[in-house]
Length: 414
Image (cartoon, rainbow, N blue to C red; front, side, top):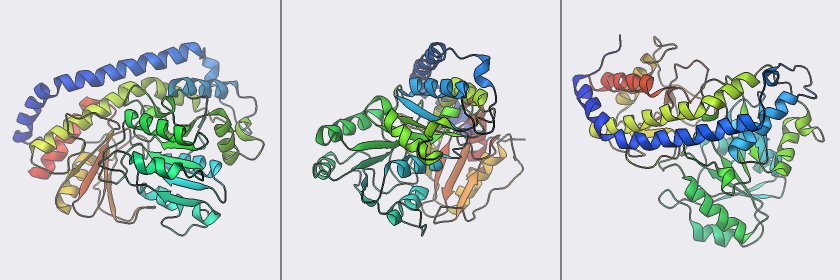
């Protein structure tokens, strides 16, 4: 049975008081996004026929067309790719970048060093002959300044006229910075387009969907990409990813997914449309639970005296990721093991550090999830290096998340 340390029971009572007004703001975002999604369902006249399974080549799938039109409305995009063939957020980002960049093109990441698997995609690390750099793409990066864009340096670099694509990573990855708000993304998009309107702006939108009232495609980003096993899948989608943005660019990316001149016209749905749309329908509520869990965790960890808490519990949220330094490897392992023990699936399993594909250090991961790798469900992972920073995200409901976090912290401090 799950046990909670008496000290944490007292902190829980105080958190209910101190977080009340903050949670009201989270509820308002959920209500806004729920209204937007329901209107999109009504506009696109979704019926039971939309969920019919189409196999084989997937020609003439009217359900697929409706699904992609609905997601486009929700995300404020001209068009989307919503496909079960996209297996992860990294896969979606690879399709986006490799579909838009060609030999001789210049790509700039304006958020500093990207997250680890994207470094392999670009060719900064790893030795894949398929990386962008090994296929003739030129890469540069501009560092952030205190979790905000270096607007002057970006303007100066874009004004030279030889940049083809700018990449933004909305969430923090394994970096010690905050996520990027829609307000900041809108400001930098305006600057880039005023300096050179031909530059394509793309955004890794993983972990940020439905956290604010707008998405990057509504404020100037040309293309966004992510996984349906994150926020937009609502904990219901068991596979798939999305790419959304300008129609012409989505067509180019679709040719990378299928084949030249075929683009969006091919692709069986394998009966996934019901899960995709049910997940989207529930996503504002699910994201609300994840955000409240993150805020609650931030509050407790700060009150317990740990450093590196980001975001602080009373700061604006831009994604579902919560980080905090646990000081020792023992603390990190005990916290992750406590999260696993408070999970509905594989609660008896004990996470330990090990090698992880695409990452340079040993990792520890707690993920007792219904869908393997679903980080909208409560998970916690970390590179096992000082200062032993935990990266926690998700929870299908706040109530479940709160119980698991209280147990995980009790496991660590008992």
